[in-house]
Length: 307
Image 1 (tube, rainbow, N blue to C red):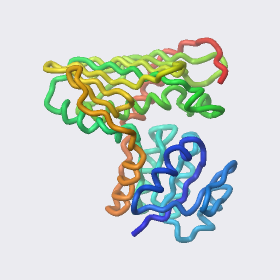
Image 2: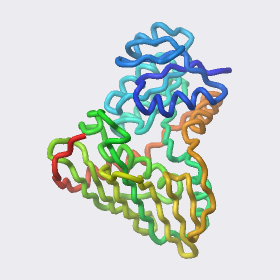
Image 3: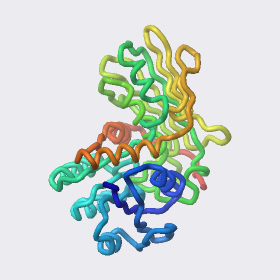
Image 4: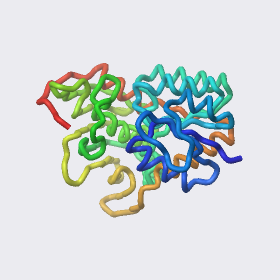
């Protein structure tokens, strides 16, 4: 069976990542796009999800790439129509939204997939295996990038529910919650919020594993030049560094793996397998850490930012 999919929200990430990935993965074809401002090539185009569902009677799945603030309503509409649903990260604006969608997908007997693309970076699985039999003493995360490069002209990221710097920062948290077997808790957070925005541009989090290993995290959206996506782990008998978003692995300072980015094609293969198995994969662990940071975080006003 080949999944006939419709994509909702044809923005930068959809064009840069989703369309090329779908084109190279067996078992799924893009047959329709719903977007208010853009049109896909070689597929049927609709102004919104409702029109797409009405016009595509043979549609099997819906891929949602809109801002998180509106994703819940769209996902619910697609699930109620009996469609499998692929959620771009973050899977919702709140944890309760994703929990409700999971319950609905189970009731409808369809697949819901909360896609955490950074978990599929080339070196993440090897890092997880290395950590499985080691005692972690400390973890440090540096996730710094340039918002003007990655999210040009996208005001939704600065609005309530848009996540601000946690839009990229949640990628680091998705890797963290994949490679660390223990529960992780947020102890404190400082959130730098520009005077003209509603969401943070920078954040520092103090967290800990259940056994007490400290986790220090710095997220910053003001870095220009080379971008930094590093997770460093100190264990009793060795050290690990995941860099380049999880595609490069160093153990005790020596490069063990350096591979190209194949995150999105790997995610789509996972989605095809989930649909075939009638399964659900909607982990909310990274989203819960972000929610906890907002709950316990200290708001630190900072200078206005123009993007």
